[in-house]
Image (cartoon, rainbow, N blue to C red; front, side, top):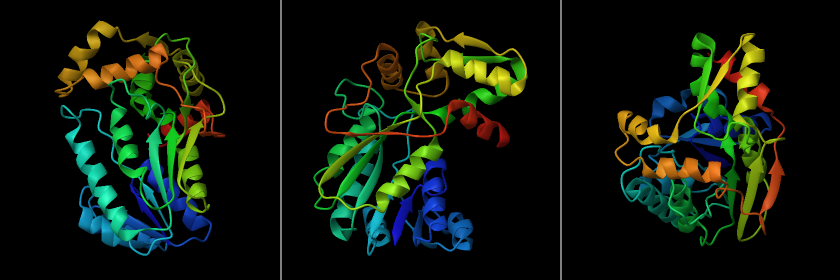
Amino acid sequence: MYGVTGITGRVGGVVGRTLLEEGRPVRAIVRAAARAEPWIGRGAEAAVADIGDAEALERAFTGLEGVFILAPPSFAPLVGFPEARRIAAALRTALLRSRPGRVVCLSTIGAQVKRANLLNQLGILEQALESLPVPVAFLRAAWFMENAAWDVAPARDRGVVETYLQPVEKRFPMVSVEDVGRVAAELLQQRWTGRRVVELEGPTRVSPREIGGAFSRLLNLDVRLAAVPRETWQRRFEAEGNVWPEPRIQMLDGFNEGWIEFEGGGAEARMGVVGIEDALKQLMRRG
C-alpha cells in the first residue's frame, strides 16, 4: 500500500489518482476525516494526521510500501522558518519509527542552494530526511506552471498579466503539476537504495512573454504583460500580510539572476510532457 500526504491538493491528488488508476492500493493521509471521503469513494483507505504531528504520522505511515511526502508550502514564513523546521522534525521522527519501504519527497529546484531564500524551507526538509535508514528520493520540481492560476482572472477581465519573473524574455524552468504527480507515482513503485535526487522540468523552458502570448491565444484577446518593478515588491508583499518578505524576494532574485537552478551532477534529469498552453487550458477550465 502507498501512502499519500497532500492528497487533497493538486500534486498529491495526481499521485493518488494515478496510483488508483494503476490498481495500486492507496492510503489517503488527510488532516480531517471528511476530506478523505472522495478518496474512500474511489477505493482508498484513510488515515488522519496533521503534517506536524509525529505520532499521528507514524500511525499513518506504518505498514506502507511507500509514502509520498508533501510539506505544505509557505510563502509568508516566520523569521528563521520555525514551521518548516517543526514539520521536518515531525516527519523524520515518524519515518524513523514507521520505516516504510521507501519515501518520495516533493522538493524543489534550488533546494541545494545555501544562499538565503524562500526555497530553504525544502532544503531544511531534505537535510532532515536524507540520512533516514530507508530509501529516499527527493523529487526536485521546477517552477509550477499552475502558479499562473493567479493570472487567469486579470488576463480574462483586464487583459493584463503581472510577472515577478524578469526579464520577461528569459526562459525559466517550469513544470506542470500533472507531470510532477505522475513522476512521483512512478518513483513510488520503483526500488532503489540510499538517497536519490530526481530533477524534473517540462518539455521546454518558458518565458513570461510566452505565458502572456498563450493567454492571448486562449482568450482570443490582446493580453498585456507587466513586469512588477522590484522596488515595489517588499511593499506589495507586506500589504499581503507577509511579515518577513525578504526570503520571497530573494527567491525571485535567485530565479531572475540564475543562481536558483538545478544541481545537475549526480542528480537524475527528467522532462515532463505537459506544455504551458495545455497547463493554462486546464486552469481556465477550472475557472
